[in-house]
Image 1 (cartoon, rainbow, N blue to C red):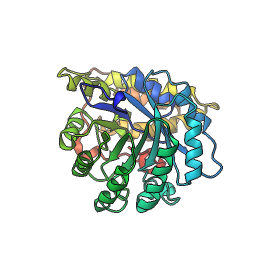
Image 2: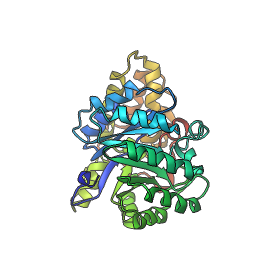
Image 3: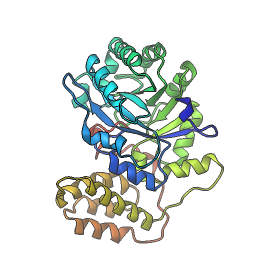
Image 4: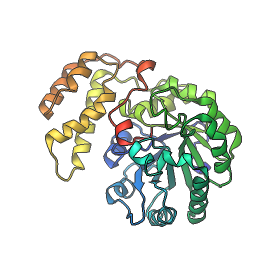
Length: 345
């Protein structure tokens, strides 16, 4: 894993977000600089699960030239091993296990973040996958299910297995996306584990990213919702690490990004339906529009057709004004994909 880490700066990951980080979204991110490493949406694994062909395209047709990890979610050990081995037949950088998704429909099946209630089961899963995976094996987790006091026992489990990296969303499952992150627990993992630790959760700009790194000593950042709103964030951070000035996008640049996102995500739909696609775009805009203009946020929620959608976007985003930084009190708010659809960032 360390061979994927830049030698002169922290590594930058795009967080896996269900129904977000598909092939189309990866293409869009790459146009704006993109992360150093991508992670797929999770492959759902159960007894008779097969490799999801749609998600697989984000590996087999990925145009970025950057490493792509395939993420698994599930609790059936033989099935996890079988699907991991099947994915290793494709050009993946490694296999990642999701232990962090807080969506109730996932946790109720004792998968994702739900597994954090059962450290012994996590121990068995990690042991079986580590034995089966001849290559990089990473884990994405939260700091516990109910409370952060659970994290010490989880760290002991992670330390028993030669995982190649641990990405930590610095909240518990119960906290969802509605509280500040807990950098002190990420810092504890950095101090106790031999593998690189990647800090995740609430990175929305250079300031929040640099602060998270300074407070944890992590080897890098994993950014999810912050990249939906600001696809320039990876280049902005890289410039900051180099002591340079990064991109300063303006309103019209955000409009171009929205147009690009609309076109790319529409292009992968087998049965394009305009009103349905606008509904999907409104979930992106629930985050993208924050902090720009309250009237923009209000009106974009009420559009139905592509014509209405772009008329509102162009009304508010055709100027030269520099985009505002998302206020800290709003950076935790995102109800479009996160809580409802199992996004893990």
